[in-house]
Image (tube, rainbow, N blue to C red; front, side, top):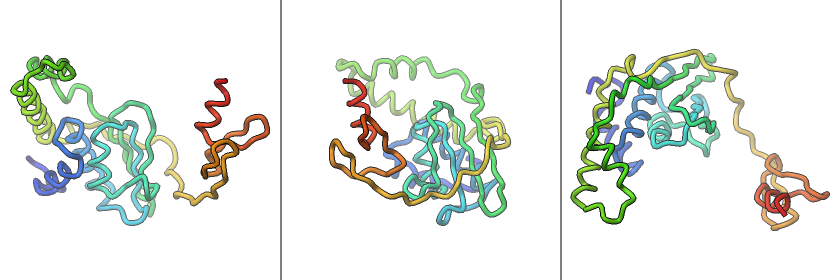
Length: 204
């Protein structure tokens, strides 16, 4: 690997955090590499913000390697289904939008594709499953070796830097009695409801 910012030891720690090596995780590792190179090191308290437009495996790599997490409020998920990651540095407003190049991954291995399509089949042998994961990891390793400029297109961020996370008051849902953040409530027939209860009431 030609990585300068994320060495093999960090790759292995990221794999341990996620649970396995796969192409999605490899994409996240490389996106985190861009973040570390362009924006700065591990996020302390909310200095670095990551906005991810997917919920795929690579988001675990971004959390682990950049320190941006849902719990701190500096990892924001937009459910767009895109392998696109935007990173900001609050101190000076610098940001970069990291978009995967569709052509970067090349044509998938036909054997890998065939095995992947059969993973849910109960008659898939253990040998075939092992072979799939072997090819799966090999594909991930290929992604780790692709030059960053071939793997991603770097763009200007869209929109402003997300605001700092705020601690909101909790209120009690008047249907289930559970506490819910006040900004996540809905009103229905004069009652303050959590989102699940609101959805149930609306569908009756």
